[in-house]
Image: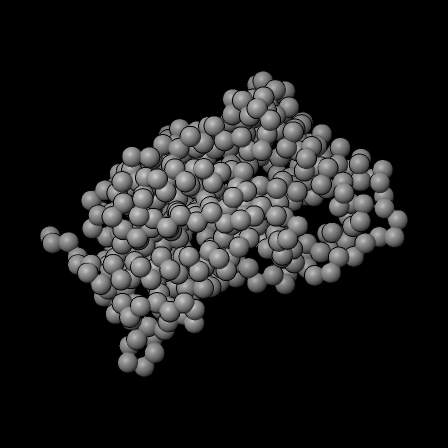
Length: 416
């Protein structure tokens, strides 16, 4: 997509718009108790993004950017893949939406194999072929796996589901009535409900990104026997087993402490004014896009504009009150011990080397706990590495499924 520029840059308008966007974020931050301190921490990030927006506005007008977003939304194929829908029910009654892509069969009952690389013959034997289950991250939905879904489509059975309160799944019932806060353990139980409904038998490969990887760990923590009996492979992408309260998010040291101390309260205050905040998000769309690029991609300038816009749409579709509900769960997340359940199966641990949300050191720690795993650090990769570097991720993920399919040849259902 070619870039079109104005002949005369509007420097004053750009600076004023950026300052106004930063001020809007600051006014949101002041909504809660001690929010002035949190606003200073968050403002560091906002200022950086606003500076990027100002530079963009030197060359691209507001109307042109709006038309470009509309064109990308209309023409982009990302997130359009759909499968057979189904519903699982969490232990609090929340409806969890999932879709199944079945392998395509050739005459004679053999499953179609992908062009590159080839999966072993085990995938042609429906009784032994693993089902690959994808778990998405925070503020995303199942469509975040678009490229990986396309790569495996038709060759192996896959399940894609939306975490509670995300995508097409219902708002968490326990959160609506205030009876139970969101926890990573709750998400692990949600995954178990989806597996019981969508994959009642046969071997399973679990793939999780960010919060989805934590969900996979929580499953092992609470259902180790199930994992031992059914799981033949695991992929943990851009995720963490704990210590998320120490992540710097690219902020200076003083900003980090303030952010971790006050961000949950600020988000809670914003969630209580969700209608006003959602209007503010729309009003500061350019600043929001700058934040998404900064925290999603390692090299934002090299990302296809359609992919960048797709990521923006995924994240902006998550209501602010849902963002607030989930955020506190990450500070107390610690599933280091649970990883032992995956030590005996083929594993992939992959991260972008410029990930600011779950830094690559967190993946290296997981790799140390799973010494037989393939550890991949993607150069110039950010948090949404599966969208930024889909070919590399697809290659390593398909290799994982190959190894898991070989493992599934010896898989046998547990005796009653």
